[in-house]
Image (cartoon, rainbow, N blue to C red; front, side, top):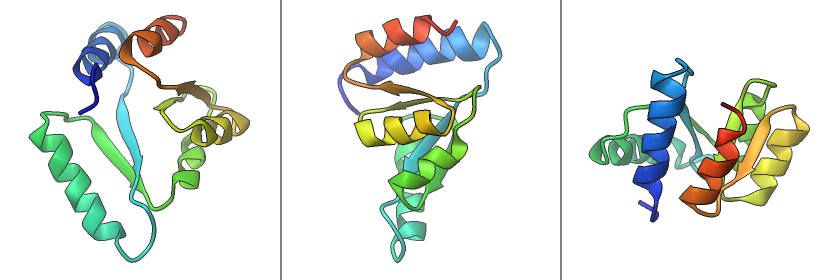
Length: 110
């Protein structure tokens, strides 16, 4: 896990799930066809091993993340192109650099 990941997950869990009953999911990409099913299983195993129980949506390509954008969706991602594509499709994209900055930005949406 990246530094600060537990702090960010705790904030999301407490402020969005518990206090506001917001649905939280993990949106990730497998890297493409041919390995998709194997990578999906690996990512799900990794999430469970880290005690992360949010529902995972694992798409084949990063560009497919934008398919989940709407005015009520927030994507936190460290890849700027993913955020730009998500924003273009009507979602709210937050470029993740570190937990404190992302938490500060998320507070605006509470």
